[in-house]
Length: 184
Image (tube, rainbow, N blue to C red; front, side, top):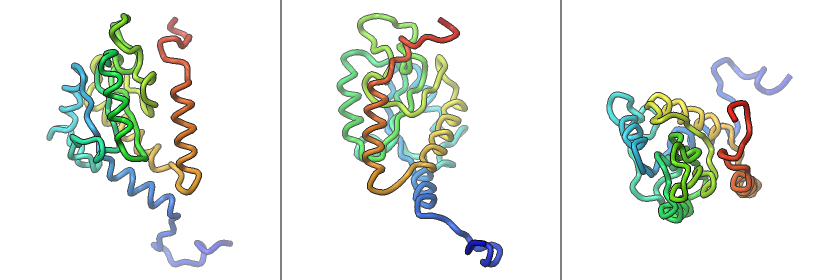
């Protein structure tokens, strides 16, 4: 017996959080961080055949200060790790990260001293995208999953504290390479 029952049909009832979530998900600006062969697939996703413009992401930003999504595509070397963190720190809040490809997610076949065994050691990752290299359709699916996550995010005074706690928890989490599961 709420207000929504007394309104005529077609009248839109929404909360500020839902409206802000819709606006945020519809205007995600990615920063490219293409390091290896996965970057070719990421560039293909932005081209005409797959057309990321349908999701409000037609322009890959060259400056981290204009981006709120970092797509790490490819293996990250030890020398590149501080640069990756610096670019992430320069992005405005709220910011999200997609780890694209098995090399970015867990080091891939490069289990040596020169390659970081998962970008989650450097920045908190929101979506892991498997594959070597992942297809453009897989990246679009990961972006749509990230849109769902963004649309459900909270606002208010506790949003920044929640983001800080989530980043700290993600950085302190067990790396993928050390996780034990059915395949190990």
